[in-house]
Every structure is written in structure tokens, then in C-alpha cells.
Figure (tube, rainbow, N blue to C red):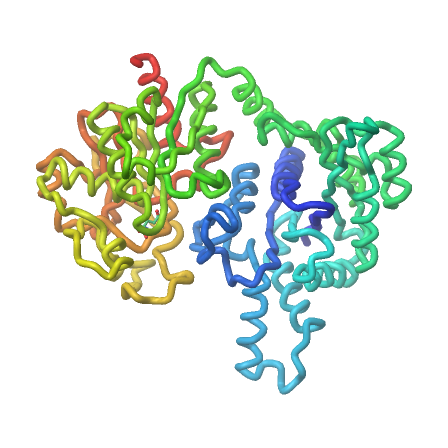
Length: 547
Ligand code: GLN
């Protein structure tokens, strides 16, 4: 039976609960335990799949095709454990399940209430897979005191109460603000936050306090006394240069020891942190730097491309260089020449996105990269726009474009080299979609295999011809144009195993030009950089020696 660690947050949002949970997961692994991490989100969307990236940051896609919160990306990057559909749930999904059961008559005519029906549904979710792992880390999104979070807090209270003593602990993240004029870290907001927690029946075992400076003894003692935790369970989470320093930093603060103590696990197995020492060493001592331009649509919010940013960092770790990624709004290139903006970069990434805004700017960025021999990685929409670019300029199809934009505009302007995917196969089963289908959860989602063409650049990069990558798209490059595009110099170097869907294109003769229909950034880890990112950053290093 798994031991449960419930992670809550107080005082302010954005304290990094997800990161703290992920780092703790990594530390427990370092001590030889298996872990699984989960996120419970209080919002009413059924999943984040239909939310704008500006709302909630990136949508992280799992192998089994769930569209989830970006914290699941942190969990995976820190632990290497592939997230699953059953690791992410929202109030919306919980209510949907409860209401579906009510419609089916499953509740036998009872009045349906938050307690017990909604809380039972949450508890059932928490228990999924509990016999498969040593530790289950469950993060509750939002901040204690939020109205919409209450059913989750109540559910974890009941859950812990119903379990044998010692099977569940609570870890609470707060902020210790530093008041300059007083020269002090203030504990009062944390005291209030814990008071709020205790008023709903939860008592934290561990306090993780974000602070700009180390917590002096006096404040630590005060927190311990007023919040009813042991002094050694008050853990300082100081600001770090890199998130990958978090496991080592929290270990030095005694977090993993405090957690094992709270479970009365003694003697605690010794940790092996070699993996994290290597990662931190590579990040702290790079041999040089490369500049990468990310030309996308959602550049106003870095969280919108969270996994991409991290995957680029991992590519840097693989080459022992620092990657300086700069985010450029592709829309700018629709009115301005991209050259002055892009000169001086050692590589260009055009990431995923939806809708026409900024797409022409991506086409122009791809053209710049192709013509100037600058390393180019196009991801999903970035691959589709690279194909549009090649069709227009190399294959003499000036009206090439994507059906996505014609559909959106109710127009017929383009020859659809990128068209709506009407069907594809999953495990031998055919999935069919119409262009006007409901938006939620209807894309081609999750892990699909691809076969790489022998002798292609990507086959060399992967060192393999069979790969599996995660997808999230509705549109696809039309293979009807394959011959015409290949004759013009664009090679289709990866296809779905049935040969029906193109997965990868590349430009032979270009130093590094690859477009992928999937999202390689979702599978990259600091201790196992994704081959495409390792190779792309390697090419950027070569480029940096030229310019
Ligand atoms: N909008 C494109 C599609 O649906 C690309 C999606 C993406 O970049 N994730 O195919």
C-alpha cells in the first residue's frame, strides 16, 4: 500500500508546489523508493485541453492521451516516471463523473451532495493504483481558503482519517516575505495559512517555506511553535538559479529526511544523488553559450512553452553549453523582415500552436532558417508551417496553406498541403473526426509510433528506426503532395507505421532542418535529454562557431 503525501499551498499562488513535489519525488527515488505524482485541480474545466495557453500555461500530454496540467511535466522531468491519465483530475471531471452516475441512476434516488458524493469520487481517484508504488504524492492546486478547493481539502482529510495511522502526511508550502525596513522574514502569513488549514481539519507535518534568505533560528522556532510542526520539519526553499538544483537544495535542508521521519521510517535508506550532482554540475559549469530564437504565438507567457524551454536546457546539458532561449512573437514577422530579428541566433525553433494569428510569421522564420542554413526545429504547427514554406518556395505552390486557417476564417484561400485529419488508427481501431467536431479531447492525442526512413538524418539522430512520441493535433501534412515536395527537396523521413501519416520532414543538405508532427519536448529529461534536442543544440553550437 502506498504512503500518501498531500501537498497544499498557502499565502500566495505560484510558490512552486509542483516543483517541490517533483523534487521530493526525485529525492525519494534517490533513496530507493518508487513514486507516483498526481495533481488535483479545483477549476471547473473538465481538463485543460480547451484552455488558452495564456490562461494556464502549457497543456502537458501523457502517453495515454490525457491533456493535463503542466505540473505533470515537472513530475516527469524530475522522476522519469511517465504520467498517466489517472494522475490528473479537475473539479470539472469529478462533477462530470458524479452527474453521469446520477443520470444513470447509480445513486438509487439519493440526494446528491458535495459530502459524501463529490468527496467519495475524489477519494476513489486518490486510491487508483495505490498498490503499485511506495509513495503517492498528491498536489492540490490553488491556495488554501479558495472556495473551489474545499471539496478537495475535505476529501484528503477524510482519506487520511480512514487510512491506518501513519499512512498519510501533509506538506504545506508557504511564503516568508522579507520586509526590508525591518530586515526580517515574516512568519505571520504562514501562521494564518496554517490556521486556515487547521480550521478545515488538516494539520501539516512539514512546512516548506519559500524565502529569499535562510530562515534564522528564531523564526524557525516561532513557526514550529505556532504552526505545531517540529523545528526540523520547517524547510527553507530558497530561490535557485536553476530548478534542477531543487532536489539537492531541498535535500540539504533536510526535506526527505523530515518526510521519512514523519512516516516513522527508521533507519532511512541513504540517498544516491549522483544523477542530480551531474545535472547541476553541467548547468553550473557550461563551456560556452548558444542563442536560440523561439518564434511562436504565445511568447507573452513563458509557461505556455514550459516543456520546450526545459527541453532546450536539457539539450544544453547534453552539449555542456548554456542555452539562452529568446521568445519572439511570430506575428511581428508578418509586417517586418525577420532577418534583422533572427540574425545572430544559432538556432530557430517554431513550436506548436493553434489558429492563423502569427502563422505567416512562422512561415517566414522557416524560410529564413532554410535559406541561411540556420538550424531549424519545427514542432507540430512549426513543422506544418515549414512544409507550407517549402511548398510555396521550392515546389512552386504559391497558394499553399493550412485548412485550419481556411476553416477558421470560413474562406477558401489555400491549397491545403496541411489538411484536417479525417481518420487515423489506434491499436488497429479506426478513429474518425469531422472538422466541426466538439473541441474537448478530440485531437489525435498521446503516444503513437513512427517509423524512420533508413539513412535519414533523424534515423541517425535517434539511432533507431522505431520511435514513439506524443501527439496533439487535428491537422496533418497531406501525403498527396509527398512526391512533389520530395522532388523539390523536402524529405519525408518519418511516417506512421501504416505509412498513412507523415511524422517527420527534413531538408537534406541543410545543416540541420527537421520538422516533427509530435512534441518531443514532452519526453525530455535533464538526466536523459531528448535526442532531437541534444542534436539540435549540438548543431547550434556548430553554428555559433560560424557566426
Ligand atoms: N493547430 C495544429 C493542428 O491542430 C498544430 C497543433 C499543435 O501545434 N499542437 O494540427
